Image (cartoon, rainbow, N blue to C red; front, side, top):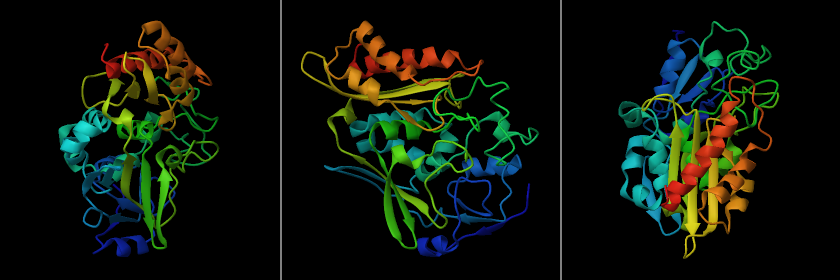
Length: 333
């Protein structure tokens, strides 16, 4: 493991003054939340920072629900959030996604802000034996495009990177129109979660809309009729402690008679960022819960998808996952 200095600032302003940045390999000073991902990166020599700045004692850990919605402090743990009674009853999609993530031990330690900034599980990124990884070493190439790419993205990729974003939580939050609150020395700014994670383009090593000296301090989710009727479906290679091959987050507002008034749909395991599907949502609005209608709407998710050989199966699987998740959310599965 590369040696580094660990800073434990006394308050958030002192932490921000150190101008660290999370989620990049070309930054010498990086913020640290719960550390569950960072420890692995350090052990695997994927990251070799000169300095880590711990935010564990300076971030807000409160979870607050109001008639306007939900606010989660960036320092709240995944376990605390999933177990919160207001989250479980009013925002079940968030609780389901969290409980489908990692292991109980990791959820007890990992923070909500850190979860959004965790790094990809692309094996070419995680294994420094592979030299070609533009996320780890900009300009070196992407070994996944011509290599074993079963785990990789079919949506949002570029010639420079097809790594999948790993967070279950982010998929649920993007479906619910969540906002990320970011604090810097000049003040706070709010970024829609849909815009927080960047497409790889030609700079896949820049993953999030964060500037030096900014930290994720909170996540907010607005109140909406779709929030209470929802389902998170995760297809994975084993039953626990595994990342999604494909996941679907669905939230529904149903009319009397069971027709869909409004739908929110997002996918994980298939995109280079959490992937919202507005065309599928529009096609579901006004539809019933019959399988044929759901299948026609879900087919729109495949628009723009590009398989790379080993991951071609994801294009069909993600459509099936959407149908099953809608049926589960609608109570007909």
